Image (cartoon, rainbow, N blue to C red; front, side, top):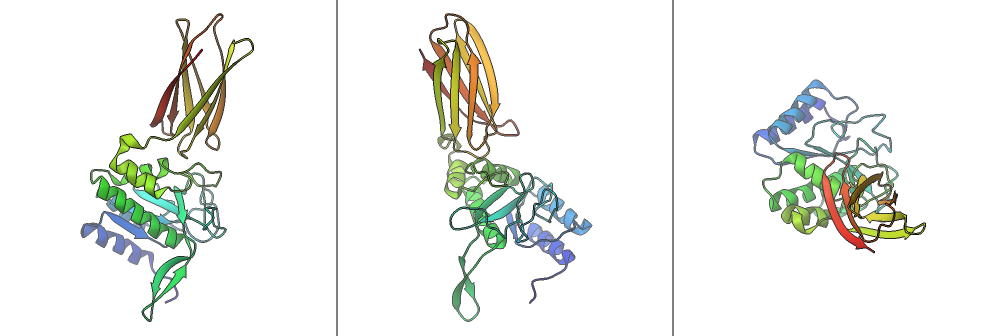
Length: 274
């Protein structure tokens, strides 16, 4: 009744779900220490390709410096979830972490059932984790061959760019599910503007992308028989690059490519500039 319990019971619950064929386990609770039995249960879930969706916690703290489990687990099948308000801001109560928290989704005043055959609302990262579990279930239903780690990566890489302290930004449920169903049709929107300055000797590229996972932009320019390459780090979904061009270069062929922090190719566009 007080919301407390034993870590051993949590570990037993995870093991029970794994043994009974669960593909996604929602864990809307937290503990400060990674007890051996919990670590073993999470490893067991990873070995069985079960996705564990864990609430980040309602402490408002930074999990990069003060971990909370299972959200801070290093297992690749654990998706940690922060809570957003109804205005898509990170909730003040929500734990966060640029490295430790994977995604954020609505966790503010969500409807739920209550005793006495009635409905009420509740807020918290527990609510957000429940929403994320539903999104993950829809993604796995669309693409049953996706591994638990791949679903986690998919949700992070289709998130919206944001300055909030969450690795994968704000979750975009519809985009994640569509990408799972038709990965070739939902490449990130990538906008590239190329201008020539300093008497045409410098190409200035302004790049914008709508995907939180975009960390690096790589530009390849072909001009006058030469190939030039440059790269920059995306910040807030944008980057600007300047490339010095060969003398008397005229028509430019420009390829702009986005990559995630792990080097995964997110999308590319080609353009020609005279």
